[in-house]
Image (cartoon, rainbow, N blue to C red; front, side, top):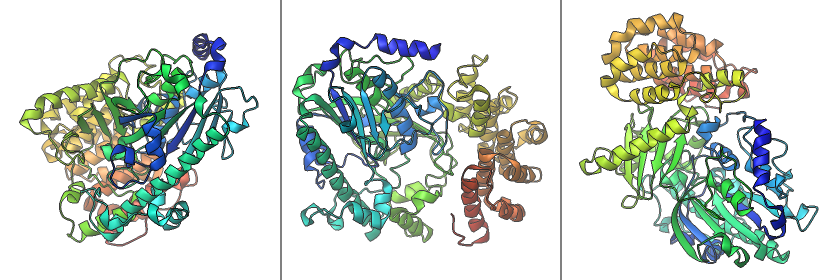
Length: 628
């Protein structure tokens, strides 16, 4: 019934009589690029076509993604929902949508649009069959059976993905047709970020990024030329955007502007200028979130927006007031958890690190393959890394970060302790907490608990919506905040160990472990939980806390048991703790070796667990075992 009502809602708001007047809509999407374009003021960019598109269109200077990595962000783009509301926040998870939530293209198709995707999906859920008319490497607006039918077509350029920087053969393939005038001199790139070491390899990576973007510029021109040749340019609204920032360390996967600030250019032909109050050639500082893209397409196509959608249109008729804030989230990136949240206005950015005891650069297999990351790691290990790059090897992160992006565009000076910025810090902190609670942030629930509850409810979206506990969201978010508040929160955290919900108990145990030995007075209560606690991931958090108190007798056997007998993500939690506690895990090295055997019943044979345990053993045994 809910699904039927949503469909009827959309159809009722669609005016069939205006079918001939509706625009075609073309999306040209890129992967892994920041606004390193000439039209955004970059002095080195060679992007003449995109610059011309901006000159005749609308250029958005404050467009941001909800994640610094592709798949969680793409799940939000296709649904108009925050990934943390859907349960798609963890990189390489596979969530399930509730029946009433659909990709926005479903509503476009119901309203008569021909919808094609060429060809990346990567939504972290199985797309319903009615998502696209065609989604493949051959999908094209040219394939529509009725040439009078309006289309929505997506083309995605994969050449500037981080692999195009890291992989020399791919880089050479993507850029092979560039002329000498379209090439860059690595040593003359004044935009090289201060948080990278100025090594030949890192400079080469930065150069490659520019040249890949030039190849993208040529690709975009070809697609627009195809519209012109078909006589459709004057009937098509064109969007150009990226799925997140540049594919390099401290950018991709991160919530700094280097990871979330994207180019967004929209060309609106004269025929459809009534759909915007912005004139051609306009630059606007309106705040736009990536979850707004789908809502905007629906609005431009005169298709009603379902009431559950969190994205809001920024073009079309009856556009709501501009956003005051945009939000972002970082959760598990492949084999490593790091729960971070972000909110920013046009100038200031607030970041909350929910796991501040973890270093910035946790060892992750994929980014470690890049030349810049290799240089960062080797220089740090040799004691030769100097200046801003050293920040990200700090053993701990600050609980809160605040940046004035106007005066500090690289976000290097944390103003969280600045007396003159306490008012804005407090305000953005409260905005963040309100967003977490209102959107029912699933990222604050440990992944094994999410998986368990999804199996009962059929999806994760309903976990915090279909229960009989009206204060659960508040208790989870408040306990998660307390977990990084230090010793002053010890009494409240000990009380939260008695909560009736495992998601709250997880953060309580995690917080006591974060405090360390000053919280050792709770050890008796924690030790009893090793045998009485029903949740595997809470037992792991309890064992971690006891290890932090140097009380490993009962804790290590618990971690080993979870490592061997737990399910996919339960095993990963245990592996991460064994890696985190370092030499305290020496007594179970033989058991860690046993855990390296692939498990065919788990995702990719449990490769994430194998990666983490390999890394831990390398540190414990001073070896150089290859991490697969």
